[in-house]
Amino acid sequence: MNTLSVKPGDIVATDFGLYEHWSIVTDKLCDQGLYMLISATKRNGTVIEEPWNVVTQGKKTIVSNVSSLNTIDEMLQKARTQIGRWKYSVTDNNCEHFVTWASGAKVTSNQLASGLTGGTVGAGLVAACSENPTALKLLGGFVLGVGIGVAASKITNKSS
Image (cartoon, rainbow, N blue to C red):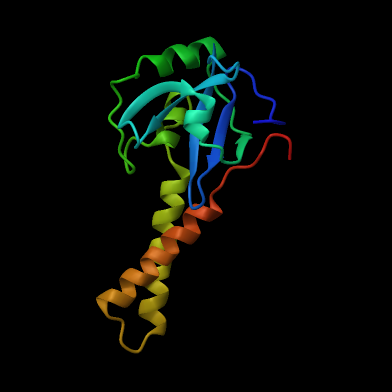
């Protein structure tokens, strides 16, 4: 976070390699003087408001070009209602679902949709191009396609 300028209400994405973790910058500072982030995590199984460094784990983080339909106060209030209540699920209630929900946008996950589309295309290509499309080959094509689809769905930086 050395050169990243953030403010409450910003939506940030942390690059964890294959996927991005989405969080909302809150109006609270941790004891290190950094903004807290609120997000839904598999690590906690729910929504939690945590220090910047705990969430980002030193990984590259960008301010997204995604904006909230709600005011900052409305978004933070809505997000905080789910602390300890949101049941994390990669398919139904992941970090991107949470952030889009709290921001008032259509609840969706582009990473999930792109991953499933990529997986379907990958398996379809294996089926079309292979003389003997075994279940293992189809699964391999699906997994590769999921990875490509999720990686291709990364969000863009506001400052780009």
